[in-house]
Length: 478
Ligand code: NDP
Image 1 (cartoon, rainbow, N blue to C red):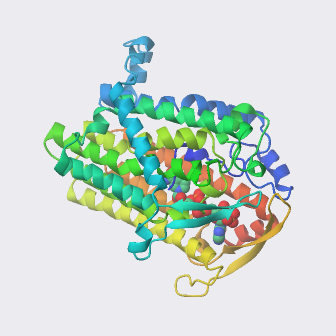
Image 2: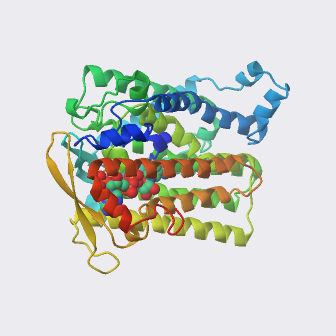
Image 3: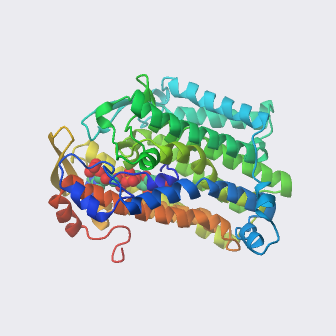
């Protein structure tokens, strides 16, 4: 899942923002299959667009819901029509309160404490992989250990929230939605601070010098990151921490807060809110259950840590990934039984495909091609690549099962699930559909840039592979 994050979409391996000419040049150089080494004008414009526009969107969404009932176009049309001035609109931008600052600080500190706790879940939950796990080989040839305990952190955090709601009553379960605006600003302060810190750290005290990349362009490096695996000490890994906590741990808690708020405001809980909470909770639990697998996703083994991940995971993820629940607080939608059943079916089938595809590649790679796929011995291609220390290394590309149908069926499943969350909100507003628009751009873009990276990494063997599996997301179509 992603970072999942915002800009997770732009999290960049094979030079996501760079031109194809540049990529082709890069593709010739052994070992240079990570993110961009140089930046052209088009990339620069994209960087400026992301840095200027993305931070505004969560605030705009917040204003459109709290002041205009989630009518997405209303603030803009009122501004253009002269009904409100920019100054009046600006007055709706939230500011920090002492309460929100304290809440955010407590939440963040709590997540750091949970990060350092040794994992107990892998001792007591059969089939769960946690504790110390190895990541993939980095472009410079390093291989790091990670303390995987996200499931434990999620269980403790969510259990405490529920215990509070039903038993202790330390605070209202609607605390997040009640302090949404100031918390959004706190999340921005965190997002910007960690991105600036990551930039300074990369120059002054990098964790792994040989895995840094400098494009020579300050803004590009700020956005896409310089250090590949920034760490504090041996265990505090910025990428894994920010990707999963505090954002994804909070996702289900934020959704529960929306559900309580809907109940408080309207006196009942709609089936759409239950669906959104349920389907997204499956996605979140899946993420933590498979955190060890996540170490082998593009996010972890190709993306560098900069604004894209630091700000994206701190701000974009907890706000834009939870926008359906926020919408339903203001616009309670009760779906017919047939519509609810359809949304549930779409959401669960999307999840099934997403998980099955990811699982197939993971077990194939972990067993070095020995695990069966759909009951048979898998077909695969042996491929070679160079790490930046110029060592020749080997890998395998799976040709059987889901990976023989299309090259990214996991993204297709993810998109089906994302569409289900949006459809749960009915079809009256554009607001909740931003998510599927964003996810489609994110995953199609991700698919294309991943393939550029794979081409740069594996050379002509990648062309042979794409000839054998010609479609990306939808067989016969794309
Ligand atoms: P994949 O898990 O599809 O990994 C792509 C990598 O897999 C390639 O770079 C290549 O890496 C390897 N690979 C490609 N083809 C094959 C093959 N045939 N056999 C074996 N290995 C192959 O992509 P992601 O890491 O992007 O995504 C992981 C999951 O996370 C997806 O399900 C995606 O939907 C989800 N996600 C969700 C997001 C969200 O925000 N909700 C955001 C991003 C991802 P190598 O160099 O190892 O060969």
